[in-house]
Image (cartoon, rainbow, N blue to C red):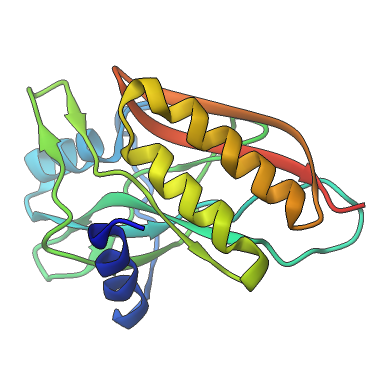
Length: 196
């Protein structure tokens, strides 16, 4: 495992997780969190606070009984800090299966080193997600997904398929998976599985 992934996992594990409530507003639908914070700062003042938000645990399990996820996914994220220093979530969550956008609280870790790469006012690129095993059987899947998000384009599918196989070896049956890319960068891997 790469030293940067190990150190980031340690930083996340040692950090205080806060629950940040949403600030409902009529912002830019369908845009990234950075665009939402940029707009609300322009309208209301305040500042950008970078860090990591707890994403969808994985794999998504459709079986009728509850199964503890194999891994958690921490995504690079930005929140709005108002004039009083109160953190607010100004980006709705996208349900990975239905595509619907919903407002909900965000589990967040502040990390000043987690800034986005800003190319233009329209294009920004968050850092790759970090996957952390929730239980021992999830170690390989989490490691392979970390590698997939950091790999060159020609190696990404290899690491994703290794992660799918690791999910299978952990006792679940992968039923589907998909990836999203921004240019050559892998930005989202979703694995759906059945635990029986």
